[in-house]
Image (cartoon, rainbow, N blue to C red):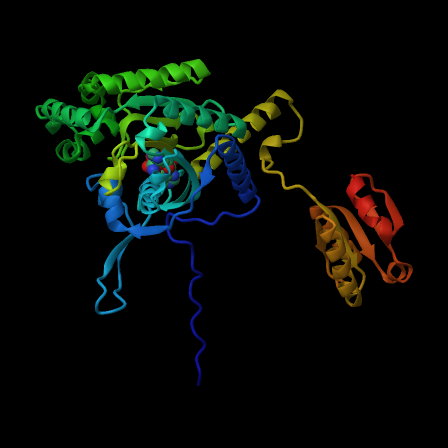
Length: 463
Ligand code: HAM
């Protein structure tokens, strides 16, 4: 006797990953389209690098002691395919600056002598604890500007231009209340001196700090400044400030970035604790945030950094390349979507409250999918083929069309059509015999019979 296999539980997406479905994907597309348009106005071109790279790239580029490299990477040993081949450690990219700089070196882009202005849009992977606004597969929209010193890549104008472009992009997307936090972490030498000063200042007090900060004080004292641990804030605020360790050229560079932002009218706040979680940064570092967890309009809970970036003047050399100073940023696209949705909901709620009794705008999805031009309803299964042929004709003429099914009763066809389209086009025996179509426009309730030759014009013009 054969036994039926036991039904297993349906499989789900892996923890920390998620599916993006319509209509929300329309918002993702709008964001990406706007970003591409803005970037092209500033002379950027797209770069697409592999989703996995040699593990060593991130160890050398991002830094062995960072949280990303020490705890969060998805790495595996790739099997050797031949005896002569060595197994290689590979990693799903946790970020894309290291990959872009690797590509810059590999393709000798520096030899053109030109400044490279590159952007990317794609998934990144970090094994973080998932929560709202923090995922294990997340999307970044990023930009990198780099080149030989002779291309002007070190100039503070580049920093200010990138920041001004971000302000423009966020404004064009309709993000409200963004805040730019800015700092300078100086040169590699400045940071060495600052690191020593931090270690000295932390030594007598670190025992009073949380376990995480005690560890950071040993391995990477700069990271202590990132800590949100409430009990440690008093100690952290009293630590030496990086601004007091900048050499003259870093200080002048930072002053020039600020002066250019002032000239452009881009507002910012200097945050001396903003050191960022990746080791490659030098000089300018920045984050854009939206109001914090206490404000529901941010949509981000405690993850309030919409994007982060900065300068990385030594990264190319760290990866074995020529000197190629650069600056860039990456926007967390998941967080941008959450912010736009939360801000739209808050605005709709406010509008509802001020117009008491009006229908609930807040309950509507703010991504409105435009209705199709027509829904073709064949009357009887034998007219399905004719309906598909008509749909082909209309679609090739640029109209958006859905085709029903001849087995549907007329009432079902009308209901289906009303959901998705502005018009229903009825194709019955009579219409096919006389080369006509019956069209009802839902907005007006008007129903007419038209010659097939005039159908396209009618569908385009009405409603
Ligand atoms: P990052 O600060 O590590 O910088 O990440 C940039 C942004 O990616 C964050 O501000 C956040 O919005 C988003 N993000 C990071 N982790 C997650 C996560 N687990 N879930 C959702 N969103 C996340 C970088 O990655 C640098 N490569 C940026 C850069 C480019 N610096 C210079 N050029």
